[in-house]
Length: 249
Ligand code: ZN
Image (cartoon, rainbow, N blue to C red; front, side, top):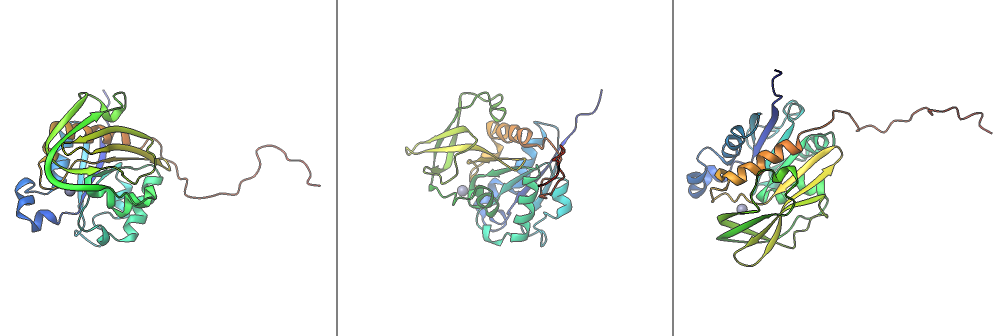
């Protein structure tokens, strides 16, 4: 029996809240990235590595790391502006060439997501610890595999419409919040040959990345976003004709 090919996942985390804020450290003592990575390892065949903003000048995302990443997961919040444009360029090029990208929660305002989507990605928000009910509206989508019709998080940050994003390829989840708002909480895109999934839950003071349904969504998304082809479309070549064009007049 041939060995199952593992998906190479890099979990990127800003990793500043956990070091500065006791309330966040209590929930994620080893960092949000570790909770996300541990959630994956029980679910699907993956090889997980971690990268963080202050790790080095590349934020842990050198060309070599990205070239060996099938799916990049992104969590950032308070320091989007500190991510270097050179790294954003590099990640964008890899997505266009087929790398999967999963952007979580407050990553909606990350440079890389706004670059790839081309809109402000603004939304309305409220931090009141209210209940969230996530409806699966595309049950046949691979990202919704093995999920119930809906599931709930007891305490969450509200992200409401309008969410200033381009019309998604598919809207897999819609959330209802206790306060009355709704939100397109799980949306997909393709850019170049790369697949992108944005998923809204994941505020740093709530234990959302330990939730079994949330872990299933992220694991499903990793499998969906894994590259399907390996071909370079970054050049714009002049080519000879396939048929004889005859003598030019
Ligand atoms: Zn948040």
